[in-house]
Image 1 (cartoon, rainbow, N blue to C red):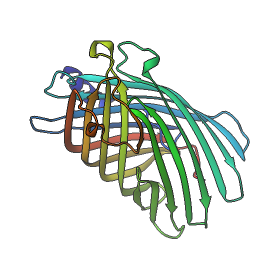
Image 2: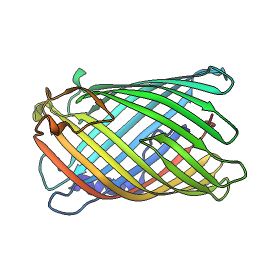
Image 3: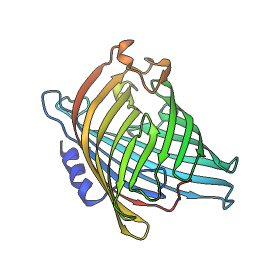
Length: 295
């Protein structure tokens, strides 16, 4: 519990970085407390940055680095003060394959574990391909597919991307469906508010002391957010919402499935050694440096 309280203090003293679609740097923190005998309190921080490694406007390579952690607190010793980490790199290739269509391919190897010891079993891999077509000055539509090697098996996520905003209007609607839909009202170029929903699926390898099991974490939350320019290309972001579906489960190393779409409930096939289903409020705060223009 001491680590969790200390990390909560850190939430307000030193934000960490998180990768966002249009940001070179994204400083983001998330805290989600809950109540009850089966409560699950979580704190997540991340550090990400990306920068171009080529200067061709039609064909561009981008390199990214990221760090993310997840701290859990609970009255069960298995996950009480359990601190999980991820560190990795990503390479993206963007090519304007026609006057109106942009293709992006991304690959990202990373280590996801409790960092008590690091082996080849801790490595995960993500890859994605995405196409975005501008239909008009106010409307773009995209589609793509993402693949993730998770410790529970192979995961496929099809994505539809919608972006709509008329220059003379204040509303902007879009996001990657079904994981990141959002609606936003822009007061001006500096200030906006909105509503968004997010779905996240993570798996972390645990140490040999826990028999090299893996932890499977799922969360869906929705809420309001606030966006404010604070200097030049720096923006402050904050949000408050509710995690209406949240699951943390621990499975044996060999309890895997061949393929999941989005991320199915593995406990339908396997019995987890630990399971926690909960809901709770979610609070987010962050800072972004936005250097990349939206296509």
